[in-house]
Length: 202
Image (cartoon, rainbow, N blue to C red; front, side, top):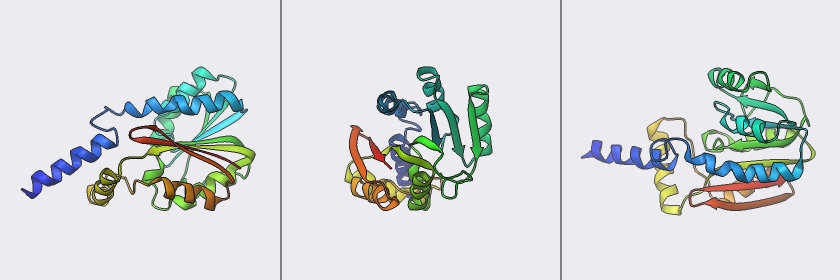
């Protein structure tokens, strides 16, 4: 019986995180909300934190070819895949989101898609996002926002599954992280039954 329960928990969390239930592609539904902001801002450059294999940046490159693309990920493998997929159109750096090997005030837009729930110390990561943003720049933060019972189960299971997930945050926790980092203009909105977008200006 315990193994059945554990497998059930695994299936639930994997479904929520898009690994099984949505084949990993569900979260791309959220990209359009970032694209609408990018279209309005018209930034010269952008960096995606926790870029993974570069799926988001590939779409940015297609829709906004004039934007200088940058990427950061802890995994060397993900960085190499991002470089390969974007064929010289991106400056990609391997590094820790909580201690970024990047200079202050470099970027007009910082994006972070489905990554914040992986960070052991999310406040450090959001502080770093603030640091590397130019004055007047925007943070576009996208992650999971599920009903409280699902979030409770997820947060119970995450440390036991050892899959790299740390915590699923609620609205108040995300807004507090962003506010504490120094952002002044903050907008949080649900963009699907399972996800949110937080827009913050430096």
